[in-house]
Length: 212
Image (cartoon, rainbow, N blue to C red; front, side, top):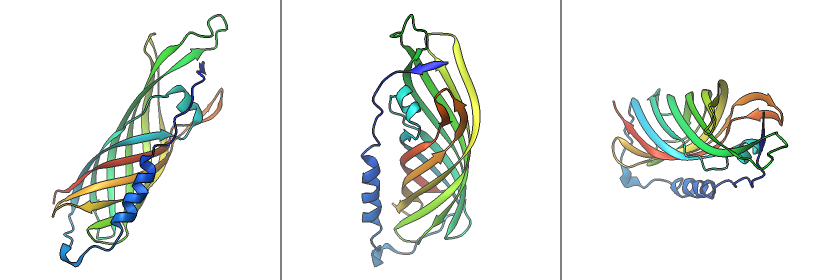
């Protein structure tokens, strides 16, 4: 078992506040000159963002920023509903201490990797140049914790769920800018410090393109 180092947990990024300002600005009614919105069938999206872990214990161990990337493929069922599948990759690093009292100051470098497969549905509030949405879905996370200075690694997989909100801003007939804020929960059992949850807040920015 490991003992965490006594480091300050990093605060949620100011980008979270910036997102709400962005949504408020673009939620103003679109001008009449924007023309009709063309509904695409299939769409593909790529995004990158910032992940803020929910668990304080996780933040203390892995105190380096985490910047997940995601690839998403979806289908617009109609002008209001869409379904999607996605793959998200996240990597971060940190340090830990063993419980051995003889060497209380000895640190060990750790690396955390996670691949999360997601399946969800979005509800688009209204069609315009900027279209906000609400969504939710389920996920399966495959993760590995690796000790870089020792031949030791722990791997596992856990199911979870997520809820998200955001919007897309039309750049052209097929292209959109995408912004979304997400909360995820990935219960991973209990450890020496109590219940473990690998989820958290994630802010992503990216591009979406219609392909049919």
